[in-house]
Length: 271
Image (cartoon, rainbow, N blue to C red):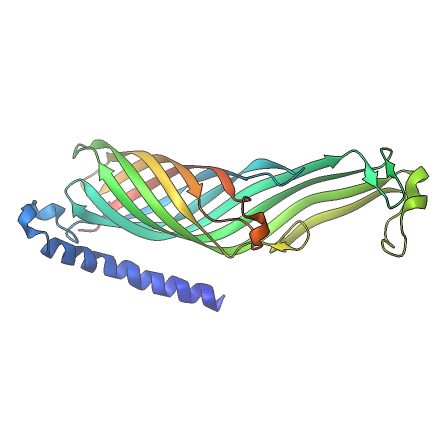
């Protein structure tokens, strides 16, 4: 927890420095003769954002991945870099999810393989991150209603995972003789169900979730000015993750996929 707070405090300091850095860029770009309101640091907006996101992961072996609905919520700031171009950043609580299912219609015992016994699994995961975005925004016009394009480079700090569901091994009465009771003392004839309803940092067996994720998001948005200082906006976003989901490099192809965001927000002009 101390590590997370340290990261947040450091990032807040960096956020506070963005207008100053942008102002310095403006000092170096005076030859552009842009209007005063478009100079870096002269126009700062703060936004509160939220919205659902639809996420899944790439499948692993005979395990099928299913999509789940999560959400994101946070605060963003932005300022002009040049006319029509803004830069910004913020802090976002980022909840993603996915499900894993499998059905194995047989059990391989040391002495035989039986199709009378089977194994099945259906588990849902909820994964929470603290996400730090770096946004570059292009606005189409200065009209009250306008479209914009946003590219976001993000870094997500892993917080926690919650899983719920079950894993079941069914042993047919004819097959119990093939089970090594010394190795598996808790296995009995019939259903052997393990229920999950817990906070964990493990995926299935002993694989840990990686402690970060990073990637890019591409948004196509629309903004409408309610008043001179207050606007609302809506932006679908499409995410591509560059990082693997699990800590073990063996699972390098297991990552977040199908991450679609529907982001809405309210924006207030500070100055």
